[in-house]
Length: 125
Image 1 (cartoon, rainbow, N blue to C red):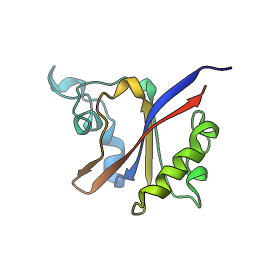
Image 2 (image 1 turned 120 degrees about the vertical axis):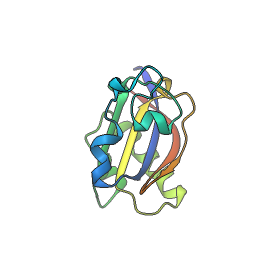
Image 3 (image 1 turned 135 degrees about the horizontal axis):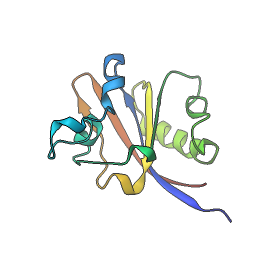
Image 4 (image 1 turned 45 degrees about the vertical axis):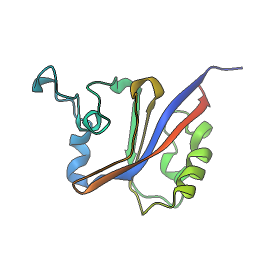
């Protein structure tokens, strides 16, 4: 049996002008500044971006939207089930990151954007 990974998952809306900046690393902002806007929204200073994947777009199904991302064949159906159960407004963004990278994940609402936290999903790697 293969190894498993556990990741945090979110869906939401990020306007086009924020997409490039939301995960941009602001290393020159000082020692106490969060690494990115995402880190700020999760109330932590740092995460390793090597364990993060995200995407934008529209699709007929959630599975189609996430197709091609790491191990999506393992987690897409559960992700889609959770999205459906959450009864969310239309979204154009999703992301996931290894569980150990975010200590206290949460949903956030900002100026013109939102992320809804869907919990963790365990999958084979």
